[in-house]
Figure 1: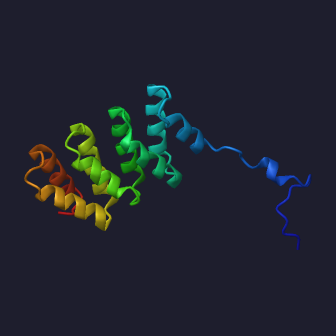
Figure 2: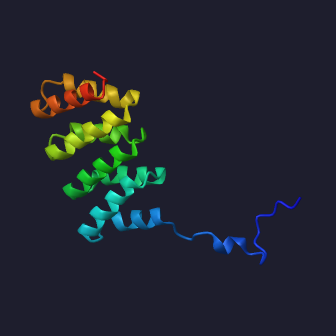
Figure 3: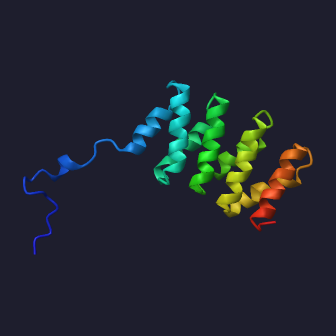
Length: 148
């Protein structure tokens, strides 16, 4: 039985994609690109369900554009990967961050549900120096998911 993966022309590797759609989105989301296109790309990465999108999105949590940070936070919540938990906790705890981004970080962590995510959320809720509105939002998210 012949188990060759070659096409009849012997050049099966020519049919492999040189660059996949996920990499095109990562490229479009990079700093320096058009802001509107970046937002679209980051949103699409979150909806992709592709684990290769996690690291580029986690890197965008440090972007200078607050809208990109917000979109990246939301996108990571959609992917539900435990890999960016530390970065999401940092976003949640960053008092200079937009409140909307901080709330999205809490939401993302609550759907990730890893031990580290839950520990970070519980520590945040118990920190009375934190913003009371965001603490309440975070506590309500945990209650909604049955984790509190």
